[in-house]
Every structure is written in C-alpha cells, then in structure tokens.
Image (spheres, rainbow, N blue to C red):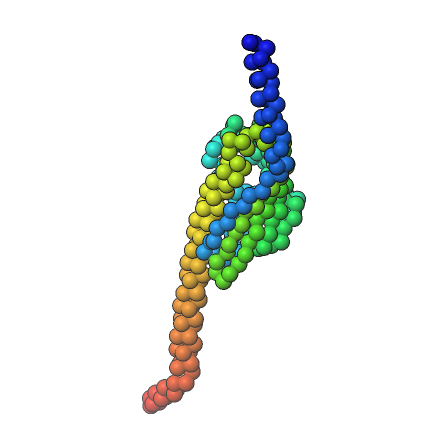
Length: 219
C-alpha cells in the first residue's frame, strides 16, 4: 500500500514538475496612463531616481527602507534594502532619450536573484503625455511554479497601475504649480510694464510742459 502511494505521489510530483518546466521562460507586461502634463514634467519624475519616492508603488511598503543613490542620467543607480515586502535590489539607467524613453536594468538580490529590463516610454500629444511602463525578463523554475497560482501580469500589473496613478497625480500637480507660477510671473511683468509706462508718461509730460513765466523784477 505504502509503496503504491509513494509511486503515485512520485508520478504526481513528476507531472507537476513537467508542467512547471513547460511554462514560458520569459514574461512581459505593460501598463499605460495618460497624464495632463507635458512630457518633460512626467519624464523628470522618472529620470531622477530621487523622485521615485513620490510615486513608486513599493516605497510605502517599508518606510524605513535604506536607499543609496549614485550618479545622474545614463549610468545612474538606485540601491534599496528593506523588509520582506520590498527585499533588496538595484536599478541602473542603461539608456535614455530626454522626454521620450528611459531604459532601466532591474536587478533583484533578495528574496531571490533575477534580472529584468524595464522601460518607460513617453508619447506627447499637446499638453498631455501617455506614459507606458514596460517590464520583461527571464523566469526560473521557482518563478514558474509561482506563476501556476497567479500570472506575472496579475502579480505585478496592479502595482504598475498604482504607481502610474500616483505618477499622474504628482505630475499634474507639478504642472498646475508651473502654470500658476507662469501666470503670476506674467501678471507681475504686466504690472511692471504698466508702472514703467506711467512713469515714462509722467516724465514726458513734465518735459513737454511750457516753462513757468519769470517773476517781475523788484525795484
């Protein structure tokens, strides 16, 4: 009896392993959002790793997460180490095209090692920008097994959606500040021009006025 159970269990395990091994060796997912702000505003919040804390869907999972930043632009790195919810890893900007695209190498160190590629694409249309967040990478045996319960799209997709929603909110708020500042500067310039025109008019009026008659001489 026990021998038959062991054989049956062994066959079942072998079948499960075969199913896991047959799953795709790579994964790919993407999410998009349209933001009411120019591309340079949205791009700036992604190109500088320091700005990720304002919109990253994972920062809030560990407020005490340790972060290290090095460099800026191409070659810039961001290393983090936190609790079990965020693990440890590093991002490196491998290429970028201002206001259009950012390519990032994403290295996970804990709870398991893996390397994925992420990309942000910014498509401007007037004062709006559609930002698309891509991610793709290889999948090992353990990750394939996890995928039996929930796909990578189901596991990571919602985080992308949360991050893009916060990015949209932050970029639109920044754009409103810029618009308000531009209007204030324009109004200040208008008032300064009016004051300058008034002063010039007053000066011209004084210059054009006839000279006052001379006082009669006293004997």
